[in-house]
Image (cartoon, rainbow, N blue to C red):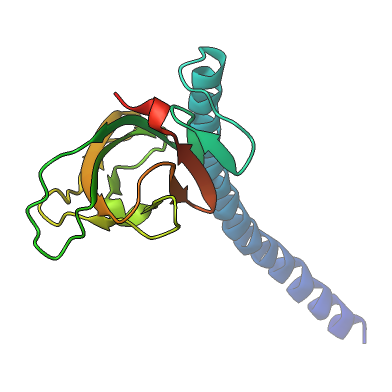
Length: 181
């Protein structure tokens, strides 16, 4: 009986360290990955905080914004309407051209990855809540490197005029006639 207990004890003592060390490796790897993810989040938050402290961008905490206000799209990406002009040349014959508006958005990519931004990432509505149509010939895909800014200029045709509303991620940016460049 003593031999059996001694044998089981030895098996237990030998197997416990193997089991624990294998578990520690998995835990260490997962902790290292989590640590890297947290470091990346810290960098993104520090970039965002620096911009806010330097007053580079006016970011609001609401769902209704005005011309020039930056909308936080998450992941360190900020968007603002920085240019509005009446007129422009609509080439696409299928676009309603009662009112033509040229809109410029500034996109601040505070994330750690390259970003693609297009007119499909937001919607523009006129005063009667009709969705304005993008002139296909002015449609562009803007690629912005991490930590950089870019401007996206697009021409729209709409039935009605001001005020226009841009909807981005359930946030509204209202553009008044007084915002014209």
